[in-house]
Image (cartoon, rainbow, N blue to C red; front, top):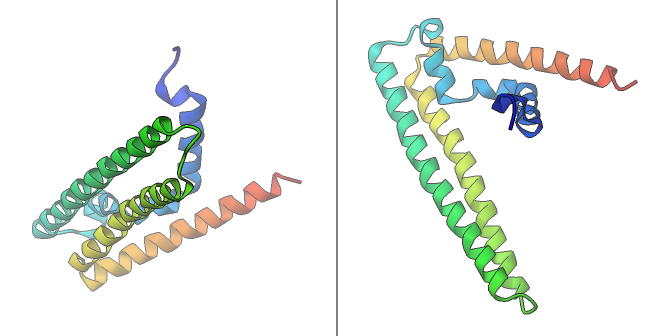
Length: 150
């Protein structure tokens, strides 16, 4: 396969989508750590944020493993019962997978909430301003995307 990973069509499409969703990047614990100097984080705050991020990564990794197991179980169950698939069992397995995915996304939101509890009121205000600025940029980019459709 030639070229870099980013040149692959599927990866490039995901990168473009991530750029369009860029404002969501501000709502991450890592974004707080990356903005250490801008938010004027103390060493203690930084340690707490890194600990929150580590806990989140562990939680999400465990949930990701549970998702892989649930998907494998569904595939094996389907493969072993071709022609005699129990639709209720398949629906139940799919619901379990989607619930696990939701739980994994919720872990990010929970971690961000914990992380913002570490910030001072002034730091929260600064972060709010950055999110609003990025949201404004995002909305402008979205308007430009729609004007290109004409």
